[in-house]
Image 1 (spheres, helix red, strand yellow):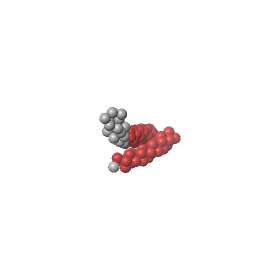
Image 2 (image 1 turned 180 degrees about the vertical axis):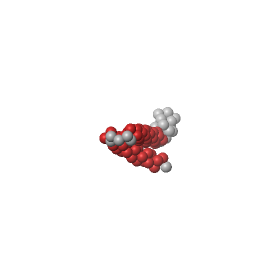
Image 3 (image 1 turned 60 degrees about the horizontal axis):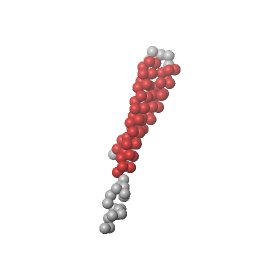
Image 4 (image 1 turned 90 degrees about the horizontal axis):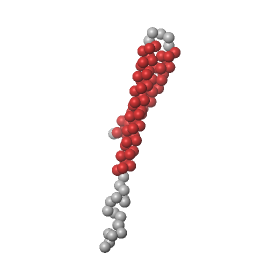
Length: 87
């Protein structure tokens, strides 16, 4: 279930980044009275996109680390006989 939500976070962040960049470009080229609102909206979308992308990448890295640590290590258990085991 977590993999699906992380994939959704990546898609959402990419969408917000593209929308934010588009709104920033349109707001900077627009000379109307709503240019400031478009610029603010673009900055908010871009910031949310970056925050969501950072969260998704941290989540992916955390899950990879937890999977790596959950792998059984044959050297830590009692499976390998030591030098004094057979005596």
